[in-house]
Image (cartoon, rainbow, N blue to C red):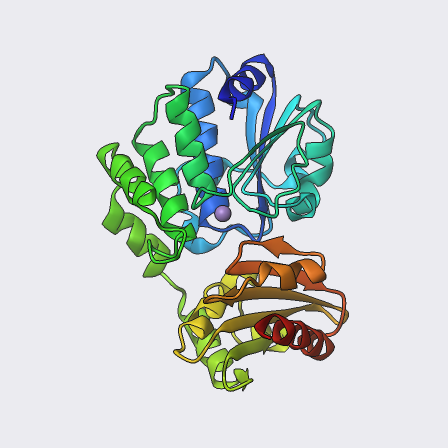
Length: 323
Ligand SMILES: [Mn+2]
């Protein structure tokens, strides 16, 4: 991968926009923050000419990531012009939400990612499916280009790697992952502080919403398939913000009998958003049937059907891959 092209693109750009994905997670936010810092610390750019944009709500637990307080909404930057846009941890264009027009408007459109279903939609693509997280891709880039990584940058990258490996537990955790995490600790990232932010700072109502969902979980096919439907009514009951369902699909996978878990969330009466996880089955193919994508054991999609119909269609497709 020719990171020299990436360096040139940043050097040659006057105004740069870094874009994170909808329903932001620790990887997209950490990687965005890290790239922002590295650009300002290593290239001769003024902070006025580099922006970060988030799509949707930044979950409370990730607000500790350095510099996210100055990230902007697509509405705040919609009249700005940039010559370089950089999509971070974004498998497909529609994952940019309202930021997509901003991305498309730029002459140079960079795509830095690690999803195997990435469509290489940029004019410059740095997609590495072998990396555990976009944070790992970023770290490799920064090191290859000999760029300075300070304590705040290390904190952002560590958060990205930690969260996308489920706290160094998922199959994407390799010796490289742990070497790199260790490097980031040496550069100043504090593992216990970051873990506490990511895993021990849940709002009470989020935990109560999860409890309610788990009680109403549905199991089928000898309990191999475990899932929940989350209606807007459930969300209102717990004054839940959009990110409160995060982690639920992993909780369902944690059950010893579960092979595939799903969470279907009502967006509106005709739209349902799906998260999928599995232990051994490639469920990215299920997500792709509905126009989504992701990783082998973690994927997502949107189904243009009401909650209950979406669930039936989804379970039908899950059954097919389970065989
Ligand atoms: Mn990721």
